[in-house]
Image (cartoon, rainbow, N blue to C red):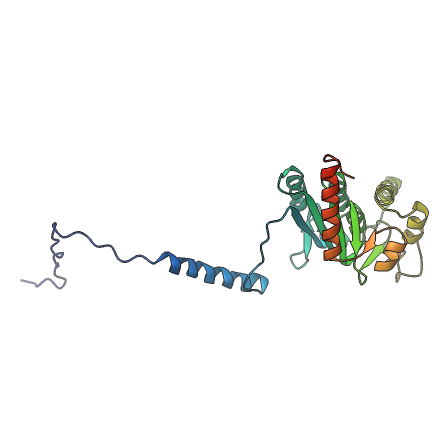
Length: 260
């Protein structure tokens, strides 16, 4: 006879009178500590800090950074603001009962004209007060977004590049294409002049100025000049913008909810 090389081992006898003892569970304190450690590790990896300050406020902060992405998806290495992300947020802010004001932070090189103009129109049409700050740069289509707020600020070191609409790398062969660009430019011109204090004559002078931008037409405007020309209301930063927004919120409440 052959011996069984893997003999069957009978399971240990269980005493029915002895209750089953579950392994000791981790204490809630240890569980919270583990979650906190994991969260801190994620923050370090993603944001370079152990903790992210969270403040419950009646003011919502929104950023417009990099390039405004429109109907065409930009390369992965580009820092972008996607208009399909921003627009639903603006509608949600308008509908929210907890949010009473919008603080808009801009550091953008411009981007898709129609997408940028759509964002600007949404901000301008909101019933809740808004304040924008141009930080670093508010170039090209970033100009209409900056002036769309109820009140606008720019830091002294920031710049705003003003130039006509252009299509890079495209040869236009039809008169209708020129007409379309002209009408689009008129839309931008009308929006900026309507929502800022810059005279139309001065805006067009800055728009079509030659000799300042290398191999192009337009003007690069610094922080103080942007205020002097009437594009931006005031030179200032976060503290001034937040204080102004609080004043606008208070004034709106006192006036019965009507945007000033």
